[in-house]
Image (cartoon, rainbow, N blue to C red; front, top):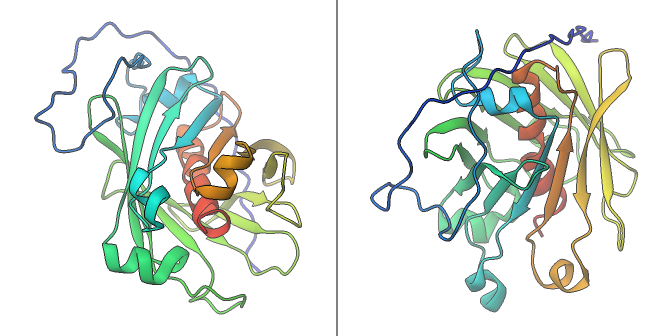
Length: 261
């Protein structure tokens, strides 16, 4: 049996940054929603911190909202998922969008392989998620258990989030780049609730709750007629930034496994 490796929290000082950097323009490749936007200021890069994850050093909560796609709402035709990520003050932190092809989205549904790209407000890709194809059946074969590989910066793997074979509560292991289990996520017996939030607990190596991923109830109309969801994720402020990124990445895997249909 694989033993969990205890991951110690590392205090981090978060200095302020007054560096002027390029703002997004209409000529950029990825389209970020238009309109007045309030973006979080980027802190100065911390030692040994992947570029673009400096935002996470100053945060203990992220709020994630999935964009309602009009074509999907009117026709049921599955489109690429897009998300806005904000801090507790309502400032934009990241923008995430799915990369997948039309056939796999509409034929394979939540089993489909996809890549998720997370961009900062300068349209730099700071996190890259790779989710391989998985069978949409309840079994314990490795090819059926869901997983996502996380890279920061893209091309440099910092860890994975892997589903655990259980028949009651949903469980996921968060592993570092060496394959050691450093955190776990445990969900409720019934991950789909009406009129209330659904919480997935984030547990340390000592089985202590240090955070949570919440799928928030977004209203009867939105829940019935769309798959656009609201999430929040909380973690300790002084948790290692890579562990914060892995917990954040787990949110997207939980979304596609339980709330995509």
